[in-house]
Amino acid sequence: MTPLDAAKNNQTPFRNREGSIADDRPCQANKIPQPINLDAIERDWAGRGYSYHRFEDPAGQVWRDFVHATNEVITVAKGQLKVTIEGEAFVADVGDEVFIPRGATHSVANTAAGKTVRLFGYD
Image (cartoon, rainbow, N blue to C red; front, side, top):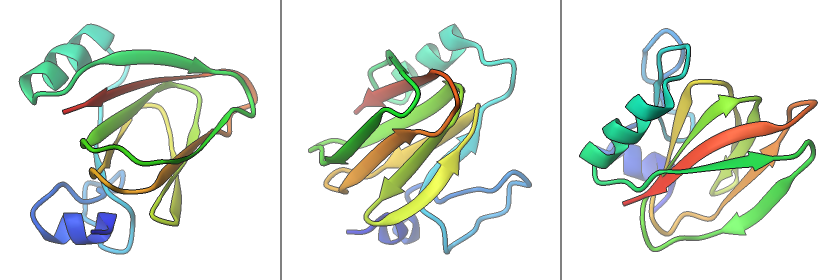
């Protein structure tokens, strides 16, 4: 199942900054209010059944072709990421929460000039 199929099957589709659904984009759940509140994100994810982890990627770091048996969410807390899900790439900025469906091949690259801080969790 592709990310777009997941979106069509009532999983959260990409929402652009104006909040409208863009069916031609990979799955992205929402824009988290800024400034980023790490404790609030951790509580929110726990309530949705997700773990919570924090990781710092140095400039240029690329994680290629991962596949998980669980759903994953990623939020950019600082910096910028290029996220590719099933071959569809887009940029995630601070506050973007990205939904990656279980079984989807995905890659994440730090496209910021410096480090990027990302939060991630699995259900």
